[in-house]
Length: 121
Image 1 (tube, helix red, strand yellow):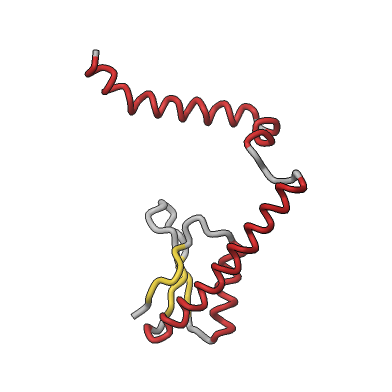
Image 2: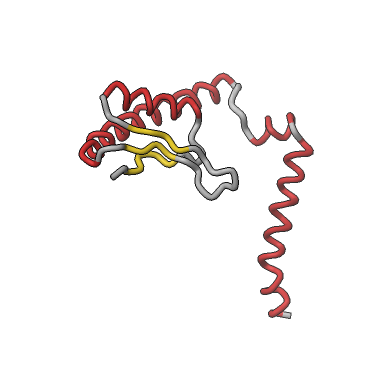
């Protein structure tokens, strides 16, 4: 029976390619399911043989450790160079978007707190 190795929710395309290449190199049979059109399922990378699951998880752990270190180093380098996206740079680049998101957050918080304000008064 197949086992899910990686849920593809919020997974970058390059990471999907890296993981499938890693599994191919290790000779682990796998397949990929695509996300559903309605967002019910996000898709995944599945291991075909249960016996390969422990080895696949071990490979994934090593890959994720290395990827995490690389991405953190890239982020630190971008912050040092001044090329990283920050709140200030996003506000300068897309002020309308930032204001609308902040207003949406404020409206959501107001709707959540409204019953407490009404019950108190």
